[in-house]
Amino acid sequence: MTAASSHPTSAEDRSARIAVTLFPILILAGAGIAFLAPDTFSPLGEVINPLLGIIMFGMGLTLTLPDFKVVLTRPLPVLLGVIAQFTIMPLVGFAVAWALQLPNDLAAGVILVGCAPGGTSSNVVTYLAKGDTALSVTMTSVSTLLAPVLTPLLTLWLAGEYMPVDGWGMAKSILQIVLIPVALGLVVRLLLPRVVTRALPALPWVSVIAITLVVVAVVSGSADTIADAGLLVLAAVVLHNVIGYLLGYAFGAAAKQPERVRRTMSVEVGMQNSGLAAGLAAQYFSPLAALPGAVFSVWHNISGAILAAYLRRRPVEDEQPREKVTTG
Image (cartoon, rainbow, N blue to C red; front, side, top):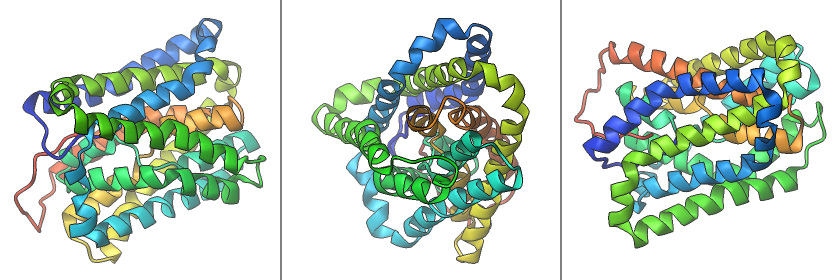
């Protein structure tokens, strides 16, 4: 999903909400079709990286320079969020792989999901959960910009004992399919603001379609092993995601952050850019290693919606006027 600016239009807001609601359904449908007819969709494996580049370009289009002002005006929660993002989820992924005694391919895939930057659909979940959405957009953006360095290093460290890791190659791939497209999107937004503003309501759907196609490609490439490993992967993904939510919130509480920031950190830590993880796993590990990322793409949107519904019913003690910020 694409991150949106801190000042969305109502059309962008509605589009993002509908896209997030239908996202898991579309991915499940795509995964089911790919599982039943893998040979039909196996050629999509060759376009996973271009699809991820399209998603990241869309993210760049939705960002504006003021979205990064939070780094200067409130550096502590941003720093805490980035630290939590790149420590909690990688270590939890490693722990889950060890606890469940996952095969090497699946273990590497789970760890890679944990080492990925924050998922951009976390922004709309934060908004619905009455979190600090401007902070969420900034956390997602900063973790994405740091991914070319931190994701390969962490993967090399934690997944290296399971499978060989080409850290330098992975860094170059992330640079090409994440950082450059995001930067291009930002530039286009600066040069053609009116055109981009009119296109913003459509961007969540571009991301939904692109991520769905990535999942279809991953499932079609590992259809033979899904029947055997499916339940094990689902268990690993659910544990990874839920523990991330809990520890993200606990980390914010331990740092004495306000309730809105705690909620934001919970969502940011628990929701990963699993489409990116699936694409990298398929390229550098194996089709089976990409399966945790594909399953995570479905599950974290379902769990995020449940978490948002739960948190919305809980009072926010530090109630303050909120910027209406959404993402797709």
